[in-house]
Image (tube, rainbow, N blue to C red; front, top):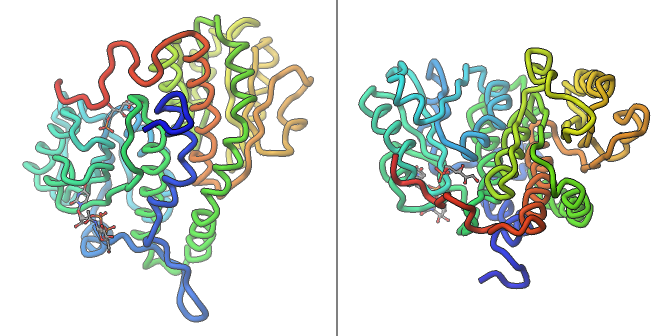
Length: 371
Ligand code: UD1
Ligand code: F6R
C-alpha cells in the first residue's frame, strides 16, 4: 500500500524517520544517574567477547548494503580499535581471499537472499570465521546461516532501489560499533554523544526531508544531463558511492561516486563547465580538505552543487556561483544518514521527470538470487 505516495521509493524515502525509530526501538539505553548510556543488541550480546578478541572485522555485501558498511567502517574502527576491511561479496569469492578463524565476518544484506553474499558466507563458514548477519528479513538465508546477527527492522522495502534499508543498516552498524566499544572507558563520552545523536536522528531526518521541493527543482535542471559526479570523503565517501548508485539505477543516468582524495589522480581531467558535480562538504574532520577540493574544482570552472552544513553556504561557495544544498548537522559518524536523503530525493525526482519506472528500474530485480 503506497498510501498518499505515488511510488514505493517515494514512500520509503519519506518513511525514514519512522523506520529509523523502529530500527532503534528497545536497543538504546538512556542511562541514568549512575548508569551510562549504552546500546543493547540482543542478537550479538553473547558474542561480543569473541568479536572483541578477533584480529580483523571484515564487512561483506553487495551494492547498497556494501555502501552502508563502508559508511559505518570509520566509526567501527574508531570504537573497536580492530582493523576493518571491506569486501564486495563476489570479489571475495572470485579471489578466494584469505579469511581466518580469528576473523569476524559481517554479512550485510537487506533481503538476506543475495546469491553472491550467500556464497561468500558459505566460504567464510568453511574457513572457520565468526559469521555475523545484518539483515532486514527475519528467516532469510543470511539470518538462518550466520552464527548471530542483528535484524535491522526497517519494515518491508518494495522499491527496487534500497533507501530506508540503507539508513537503517548504517544505524545498526553504528550501534554495533557502540556495543563492541562498550568496555572502553576512554571513549565513553564519545559513545554517549553518539547515542544522544541516535535519539535525535529521526527528527533530523524529518528536517532534511523538507528539501524535497528543492531537490525536485535541482532534478529539473539536471534532467537532460548525460552524467553526474559525486565527490565525498571520510564518513561521506560512502554517501558519494550510494548517491551515484541511486542516480544510475533509477534515473538511468551515468553517475560516479568519487573519493575526493583521488580527484587529482584522474577524475580532475573530466571537469569542465558542463559536467555537473555534487561535492559533499558537511562539517567534520575532512571539512577543510573538502573546501580546497571545491576551490580546485572552481578554478577549473566546474559546475558545482555543494552539500554543506546549514549556515555554511557562504564559506563553501567561493565566488557564489555554485548551487548549495544545506543539511542539518548531526554527530559526524551519523552524518551519512542525513546526507544520503537529498540524493535519494534527487534520484527519485530525476527518474519521474525523465519518465522512467521508479520502483522497477530496467533490468534490475529486488533480490539478486542468481549469480
Ligand atoms: C528479539 C526478537 C524481537 C523481540 C526482542 C525482545 C526476533 C526475530 N526478534 O530481537 O521480536 O522484540 O528480541 O528482546 O524474534 N540473527 C542471526 N543472523 C542475522 C540476524 C539475526 O543469527 O542475520 C539472530 C540473532 O543472533 C538473534 C536472533 O536472530 O539470536 C534475533 O535477532 P534480532 O531480531 O536482531 O534480536 P533482538 O533485537 O534481540
Ligand atoms: C541498490 C540495491 C542493490 C542491493 C544489492 C544487495 O539500490 O538495492 O544494490 O543493495 O543487490 O542486496 P541485498 O542488500 O538484499 O543483499
